[in-house]
View 1: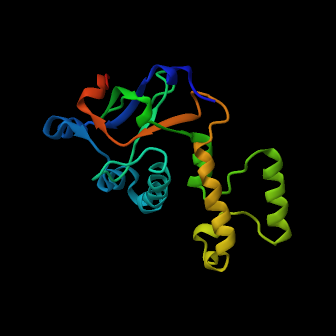
View 2: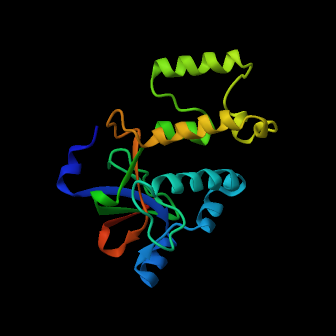
Length: 198
């Protein structure tokens, strides 16, 4: 199920970025997310998050091919109501993007990925998966990805990671859970820049 905006070809998105991105825009005419940006943003958990972002990049570029030289995608909100507001040291870009350049995904399902859990197809699948785990003597799916015993369960790890592709399956168009990614912000996409005000 898709947003009715999709039929127009051009979609408005909102993305909050470090104010230093204005320098990239001025000097290069484009904003791209690099590993160093994620390290600054996520600090002590950056390695954990970057590994998951790398998975996202590999999956997302099957949907919208990634241009050469890009490391990570730009996270965007699909609605003004639910966008991240400007804060000190950050600005919000209001951008207009061709539909063909947008990777939509379900933010609630992304939380499963962040926590290394299996994403069920539906309620029945969730119940069956829980029963299957219990019958095998497992408490949860988290330990299959990076637990001390993860290397003993390659089939279970694959099952969990294969389920993560479901983040791109939009079951319900909801501005509070659907998010969008693009590969870069080009100067001509920017319609407005919102600044923090005390």
